[in-house]
Image (cartoon, rainbow, N blue to C red; front, side, top):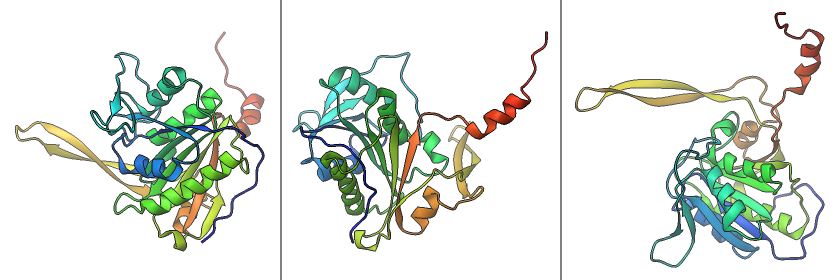
Length: 271
């Protein structure tokens, strides 16, 4: 099938420098699928965590040193493995490891969706969020499955988006990032692409109490999806209907609709 995308502005006459990162780790299949999809679209640099860092949100490392090493050790170079978080990886790459700075940041391809409230917990999203913080266009790319991933579909969708940004057909404003979620379907069965809003559906956590072999208690988190509020036009609705979801997300978390109401009757401080 052929995906249709919104038009935009911008043109790049020079080779784009593209930074790849993720939260699944530099060894994860998703980032290798992404690299394979875009490796001929620019000058590609991979800087990613040296292991799994899923659901770490926007954590950064403050109390211990970061180590950055070539990956794989002793083999043909693929990228740089960093001992920190996804946000650490992007900060370190942009601030020190890459000169000049990248023109585009891609985070993913994540194993599992980052839609609804999951956006707030996602390490994949945090790496992409560093883009607008630093004024660099960025995308978070996630595949809607935790098993039997169709990396080919995710790679083809990712390439289609990146190709149009590189060519100048699409432009990502530097103060936002694109959160892209891809159905785990054969490419020809995708319904298309929708521009969506971030939903408010979330997982309701449950904790199971267990004991280790020495009788010490520990707790294992499970949960189930809870759909909250109106799902029309959301990322989750699009995924369920077989559409690629593209949500433009900014840094401002202010609920602007509440400002006037609060200003009309503001909280009082004691004299």
